[in-house]
Image (cartoon, rainbow, N blue to C red; front, side, top):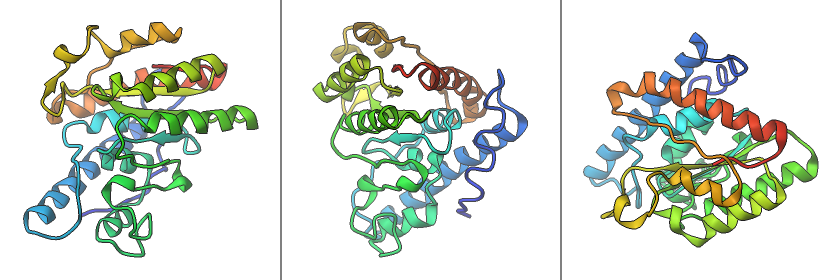
Length: 256
């Protein structure tokens, strides 16, 4: 069964503590399983020939989206990639509106005009799934700039893959965020391959987060493991993201 449930009920419970509360962990687990179930249903639809358009699956990376979004406030923003179903669900986009969008229905999140790679819901802080590699970062920087201008405590998080880590727009966005000291978290989801190119071949540093030093912003690496290990690893990921989201919220400066 697919159910959005009470997406924001437990989102900020335990946010100020050193570890997730029981309610926070339950929210994480519910989001993890909902993301996986949504994509398993979507795979079945694609395999049976239902015309839902082009899709890119997020399977195996659920803990990244859930861990980051659990550390954010409901009013914060995220910018996604072409592989954005998990980001949408973790931020609270209703799954029935997502599925309606894939079917091209007017009740979809984009009134049926966007499909999988354009799902957007600004009501919950989802700035949009983006089919152009690396360009979500520019949207996050724009949202963070608006927070600074309006003097709010909002934070923007930008997801991107290790392949996008070498795209010019990512570095331009990070540089601008550093210069203007914007409340942005740059989240690189390194799954080891940019299509068929291994990260060791294309990236010169051991960790993508090492590049943060070039922009005078702190960088940290965390691990989201196999699906059977996701709940405990998400707790650790949540802790690292909580610390990261609190810093730009307090000091108005970017994180990587």
